Length: 116
Length: 111
Image (cartoon, rainbow over all chains, first blue to last red; front, side, top):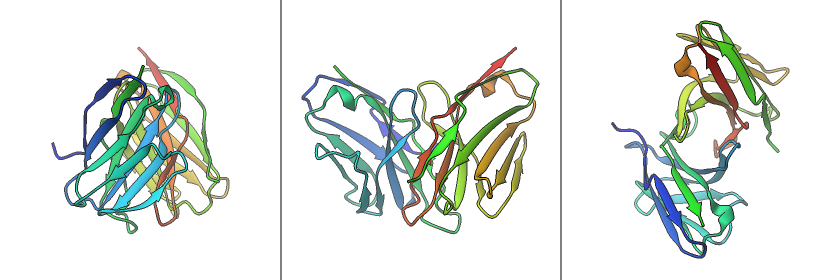
C-alpha cells in the first residue's frame, strides 16, 4: 500500500506532556497538509508544506505547535505542554502539487490524541 | 471567509438513492470534493468536480454543481449498508489549495 501513513494511530498522554506525530506522504507528492478534527466537526486546516518549506500556518496553530518537513519527505507535528483541548484526530494529507489537477489531497488514517 | 454547510443527518433504505447536499460561500473555489469517513478512520476521497463543470458521474456516484447558487450535491445510486458513513463536502481555492470542510452528513442505510 503506497498511501499516506501516520504514526502512531492512537496516543494517550497526560496534560503538560509533549507529543510528536509523524506523517509519511505518498511518494513524490510535493505538498503535505496537516488538519485537526474534533468530535462532530469537519477537519480544519493547520498548516502545509511545499517540499521542505512551511508556507502557511493557521491561527489555530498556537505557539505550542510546531511542524517540520526536514527533507521534503515525511513530516512531524509536535505539541508541547499538551492541554485537554488538544484532544482531537490529527490528519495528514498529501498532494502531487498545485493546480492543473495536481492539488487533490489524499488523507492518511489519522492520529487520535487523548489528553488526560 | 469560506464557509461550507451540510445537513447533518440522512437516513435511507437499502437500494434507494441518497442525495447529500452542500452549500459553500467562496466563489473563487476551483475544485469541490466529496470525502467519506468511516468510524475511527481517515478520509477517503470519493470524487471531485472542477468549478467549470456542472455534472460528473462516476459509477454509482453523481455530482451536481450549481455554481450560481453555490450548491453541490452527491447522489449515491442503489445505496448499500456499506455506504453508511459520514460524508464531507470540501472546497479548495487560492494558492494554498487548503480544504475547507463542512461538518459532515451522517448517512445511515437501513436494511
